[in-house]
Amino acid sequence: MNYYVMTLFPEMIQQGMNTSIIGRAMAKGLLSLETVNIRDYSVTGNGRIDDYPYGGGAGMVMQAEPVYRAYEALREKIGSKPRLIYLTPQGKVFNQKMAEEFAKEEDLIFLCGHYEGIDERVLEEIATDFVSIGDYVLTGGELPSMVMMDSIARMVPGVLSNQESGQFESFQGNLLEYPQYSRPEEWRGKIVPPVLLSGHHGNVDRWRRNQSILRTLRSRPELLLEVDFDKKDRKFLQSLVRGEAEETITEEEKSFLAKLLAF
Image (tube, rainbow, N blue to C red; front, side, top):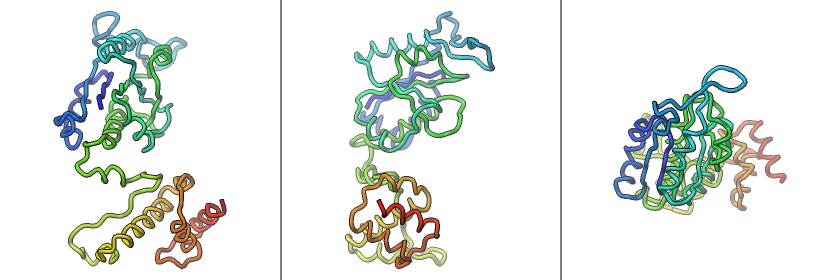
């Protein structure tokens, strides 16, 4: 996987991505990262790449030509036209499915905006994907690009030492990750769930699946609408609605599950 980031702050990207799992993956040659300073393609030659917006208003807008020049230089270097992701609050909200989709690409370009945005005309010309990491505004696209690159990299074969870590963590199959425990067996009066000490892998898997469903119900119930439940899942959900499970849920959660099971 080759990452290319078009930015006004290349050092921010380089420093942020050169550590931990991602840094080790780059050292092994599993990932590569190249930053392109858009200022180097200034039309005026003095590093200025912004101007006042037509129609008035506060702030400045990044000009189309410097961005396009930077993209063209990158495209020629790569030898193809990779997907270009523009980080913007107006884009689709990034999720695990998107991370898995992007991980299939050999090359990805990230375009980081600043000021009041980028001239729409160049975005129409070069951007293939408009992506947001949440419904809030940041100073620029650098942090969102790093969030996405970190998430996507985890799906690249060989990046994680244990591939199961990438396959069975939060949001896999639209379910949040189950609770995790480590030694000691008892900590400040709290004990590890006995099933995890049983050595019965089938029971452990079932417990974990149930806990993922329960955690998703409590924190992100809307995700359950996209989950493909099997017979054992439905049996567990029914036990929650009837109050027969060890775990208790609120009346509101029971009502939600009752409607969910009706479909």
